[in-house]
Image 1: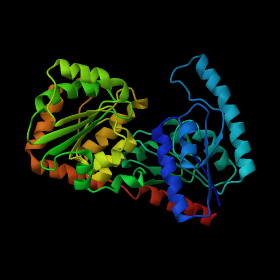
Image 2 (image 1 turned 90 degrees about the horizontal axis):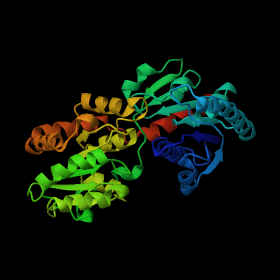
Image 3 (image 1 turned 120 degrees about the horizontal axis):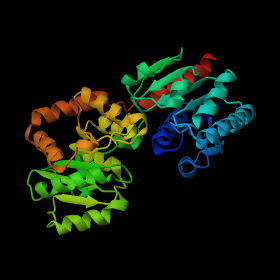
Image 4 (image 1 turned 30 degrees about the vertical axis):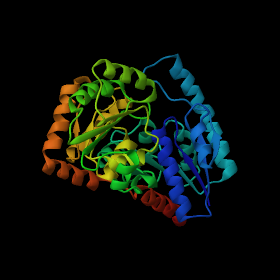
Length: 368
């Protein structure tokens, strides 16, 4: 059996594809799996590190306004379709799965055109343009959020599975994680992260909150500022008098699964995969959606989680230290509400998503 996976541009498209690939390997060890991406996306550096072959096509995303770049992208689309045709024709795959990003458009479309079973996985509550188009041609659409269903047309089967997450996310026990990180098991742990590169607006608000939380006996904060923000953050917080040992500030958390296992409350952006990991771990969250995400999809993600009772949402434009601290204090002082949010988060968690997607996709091969 030969399987093509395609998803690129950002880690939010690439890592779900890798997780699905690993699940396919578990269920069908003899499967030959390779990826299709572009030379410009992060997949060029990420995919080979996981031991999978990566083939390239030339294609570019479309701007949302008419310009010379739009014309160039249109021309590249035809080049990409030609590249995709050659890959599909030469490899003769039994199954193709796309996980978003413009790169998966040509390969999934060409597979569907040739009658090869094709599926897509959409991580966000507000789908991307490529996946909305592909839904009219593929056999199955795997939904990260039930709220995304209404945006897909076509006869493809829409299946709510949740988003695929790394298996190591659930491998760590809370007390062991606290010990590994040098944290106090008697205190509530607040995990703060604006993503791998950090978020200046979250850092600015948390600086004010951390100055107030400093020295408290009931709470500790583990805050990843992002490498590029770390030195400025430390300089500013020292200028304001510094913080006590219950406030731990790092440029980056190299073992996020351990940090998640230790957390009681999270302050996060609302990227689909980060949220899926929070939900699988049952962590109540304060979400600040990235305001410049394509089609504002992070706010749609955050609102879907908020509606379930698992999160509180603050829009970036409205955020400040006072507001974020007020929510943290509310949760720290109200154990009953915190437990309800934990239960709501856990109910949204889909740690088995990758296995379900792999099984459902492979069923198409057996049927065909």
